Amino acid sequence: MKRQSYHSSNQKKRGPKKLWIALLLLLIVVNSLSLWAQKSPKDKFIYPPLNPIQVPQVEEIQLSNGLRVFLVEDHDFPTIEMRALIRTGSVFEPEDKLGLAAVTGEVLRTGGTKNLSGDEIDQVLEKLAASIETSIGQTSGYIYVSLMKDDLEKVLPILADILMNPAFSEEKIQLAKIKQKSYIARRNDDVGQITRREFAKLIYGSKSPYARHPEYATIESITREDIVNFYQKYFSPNNMILAVVGDFSLSHMKAQLEKTLGQWSAKKVKVGSFPAVKYNYVFRVNLIEKPDVNQSNIMLGHIGGLMNNPDYPALIIMNSILSLERMFKKIRTDEGLAYSVWGRYGARYVVPGIFSCGAQTKSESTVYAIKLMLRELKRITEEEVTDEELQRAKDQYLNGFVFNFDSKTKILSRILTYAYFGYPLDFMERLKKQVERVTKKDVLRVARKYLKPDKVQILVVGNPKDFDQPLDVLGEVSKIDITIPPPPKKQE
Image 1 (cartoon, one colour):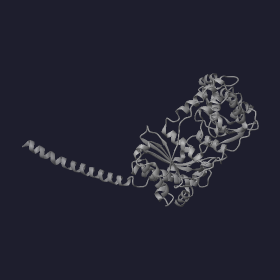
Image 2 (cartoon, helix red, strand yellow):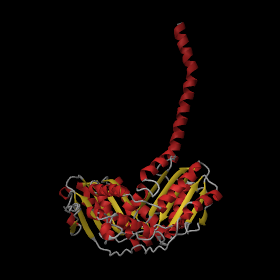
Image 3 (cartoon, helix red, strand yellow):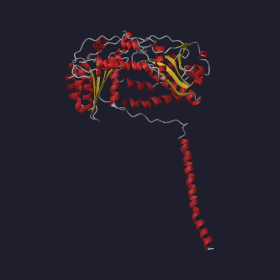
Image 4 (spheres, one colour):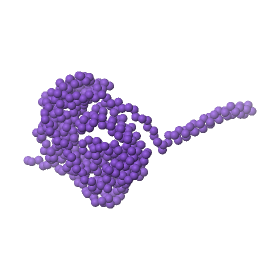
């Protein structure tokens, strides 16, 4: 009886406690449901206003020899970075010497100077934890220097020596040529690389300076004399722009630059305009057969535009909606056809870029994926985008915009590029304001004006035996041969 009485008494004491626990659990569930309803992914995300962007003070000077220099102090770390652009590029190479610019850009640094060999320069810079790199790309030569601030008086003279007194060692020339030949040997190993390279040829033309590439014969024909002549033609302080950012005082940096690079003698440099691009809109289906793959790489599109086009801000938003809201959602999310889907209205500084849409899909869905891409491309030229699509595209651009300003090095490098190509130095800030003003009508207008769904080049790299339909259901197919011409036979 006592035990039973004790148990009964205990139940009475615990009853209210259980009730409170039940009420607490009920309250948690209700609150959770309320929070879930508020945070549903179906609802709009609300992005806060962007914080003001702090642009550092940039001082522009010109040395006595005409070298244009941009300087930005940054005392966060005891380091200094320098970047320079030289008005040259592979677009100016003779057709029978393709690869000359790349070899010149490499051997300018590795070939040493009249005072130090390339290997000796390596040893000196390694001890200082510094680096000097040189290269020449399609539309510019490039120099990069990194050093600790206390080593400025040691590194700057080496940079000046490289630019003023290059030796172009024959041994290093041969090594650079071997490297270029190895690139040629491997250029068909990666399907993505093949697709991008051959699509550029379809847009610019196979012999265009913006699409052509070296062959064994053109590399073999390059001599030391060719390299010296290329260097002498383009390398001069009045044909170069330099940017310096880091832990220094302006007065000290100016004095050191004048003392070293200021001694480089200027000369008359005749650099022609960048080659023009002529493009004819045409619908064409192209195939590169790759029997050893089980998926297709697809690209379709046509010529793009320039970044200084007043319609460029609206094209940025149009492209974002087309590629992410439309292409990606339809082909990958809804249909589950592609491993990757992308779209890009390419715009460059002085020559038109390439507008392209692309996808990687299994061979058995190749033609269907292309038809979906063409359908979405046409749809964006026929109807206005939604308010939600417009807002998401703007949010995506504007919230990523701050990363253009997250370091002084990035800001100065961009200013250097704008100065090189003749753009306003505040081009990025102007672009942001223009993007903010883009409307749905603007998007439809530029889509109709610049997109030609019925006049695109289509390129497929894959195995046609496994396609869901013959590729010629889209139109007459042109096959592209990517066989690498063999090296020229050596004369005995």
